[in-house]
Image (cartoon, rainbow, N blue to C red; front, side):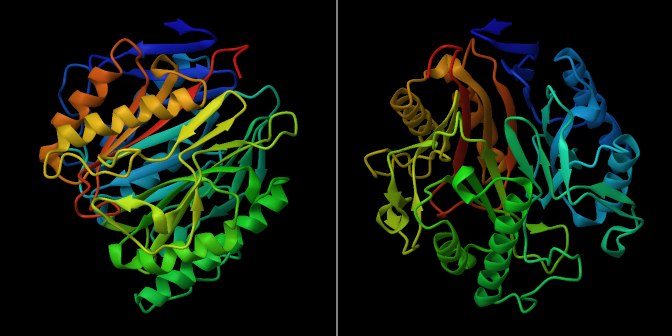
Length: 409
């Protein structure tokens, strides 16, 4: 399926595409061990499920003209830290020499209760070989019993892919803020943002090319310490953001992890940042939160449009659908349509949708709304169950990326 320079491959039964290619970039649906006939491969076997997920990724990338060697970033979600050794050993076996950047999360659940692991990968098929900044090889990753090859940044002609940043020092000598207090979470965020600044400078980029932040924390109480650190470092850059509370991370001492989307300036022109706002003036559920950050609702970077995570809070700052995930999802997609229009885009331009829900019971009604509203578009699609969102009232959140047709800016 092709739409104005965007090619969509391997349409699935849930109205999504396994892969969507726009230029060098490939957007992928998350992959797990669910087979095309609906059965789950490798029941109870973390390694077998990982290989199944990688098989699905390989098929999707081959359809788009690439291979597993084109993976630039992995976001690997597992349901228990005890599965890490088997999962990552399997990934390392299949991706030897690739050196992707990565983020590792322990989540509340995956789309089927039998699932142990789900891999949400990013990929690019660049015109020139990607540059790897600070590649590394460990025989035993942080003493966890598996070998691992990765990079801190992977740079293509259009984009910088960055490893999830935590309170770990860049020289791999350890993590700061070990007391698990609110202040420790703030210290970890401060160091993570210092590290991000350093890595982007080494790669030939800077914070003002950052389009989106995905902020992961392990307790909602940490928000009050983490977000002021984001405000301190980003100042008036105004990225879009999504905030997720996840069960835990790769190591128990990690309280905070930051993912970023970083795109090169188009022809040297600054990215457009639409509907700017100060976080202390925003509503998260029915209430505001005193978080000293400058954000925006949408970033337009060349032909790409990246939205803030959308919830049941309307663009008028009114919360709708209290206790009802389907109503919240309808409001979220109403917001998406309006924000895309602000950027000169429309729903058919959507290439990737990621759904977060806070309870397995919410997954079916939320996915039904999102996929119905995206009917006939077939974006890459990911769904995951998380511990929480910015407010307890928020039952779902959806991340959206769109690509403007060629010739439309």
